[in-house]
Image 1: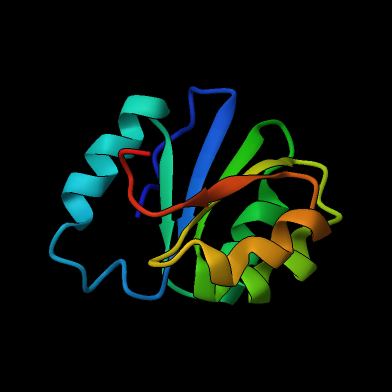
Image 2: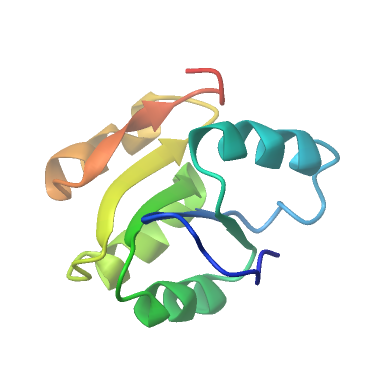
Length: 114
């Protein structure tokens, strides 16, 4: 979704298969841009991994859903550019087990305002 040049030292990547279908996507992107102006939206797991692999100068903050976390985390855990992972989930408990498995997970959040 964002192919302009990154002028930040951080790239914020949000992966969620429902992002393109969500009516609140634009609102969420505006909120994410308050944290970091450069936001990449990925709805496909393979696309997301390719985007992360191509980043070599910036630090990546990854935002994922609880459902995608178990799929993407094992595949990107060795990528040095992925500094922080934020998991958004409808319920906090189902994702708690991944917190101990991956050291770069900042936390599990129930909504964007957390």
